[in-house]
Length: 112
Length: 115
Figure 1: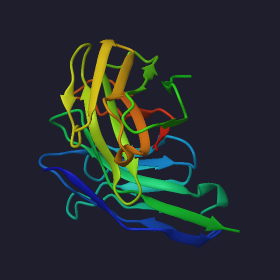
Figure 2: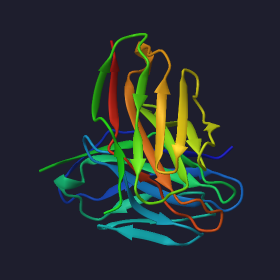
Figure 3: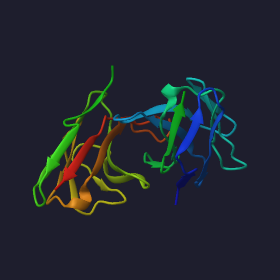
């Protein structure tokens, strides 16, 4: 079945460091891919998405490119801030249904 | 601003109690979902609904039931709460579409502790 695997955390970075959180997926057909962010004490918020191969989603300085050849959707940011400290979830939605499949989440802490 | 509202942020209940978690959305979404979130396990789907009075089991429905009498409201029911149901519960909603890929809108979550 469809599934998402993302890198285990926690990840701790210094402010202005480069961030990569790896995400790979297994799906039949052509899923859409998403990154969600959960700030402490809150629900999940959509960060960015890509709906077809080679699409790049971007928001708030974060980027991810839908790579069908490697079945990946890695999240990157060039210079993280303390305010980026949160849990990040990779997710996919198949094109045959309305259900999402989430990764287990990666906790990011950015220290000044 | 569009919203998914969960009625309680924190709840403490006793073992064996019947517990109701309420979720209301104001976006006229067809789809509604209940997840639980546990450390190291991510989000696991409990139940979902694509329409009023319709419900489908997710990956971990045991010990739970749901009710959707109105389009905007989706209730999760713990028939007899147990300590292993202590968790963060997240409600989400979305438009129904097999063509367009709408994301979920999540509520802020309810942290339930069963003692």
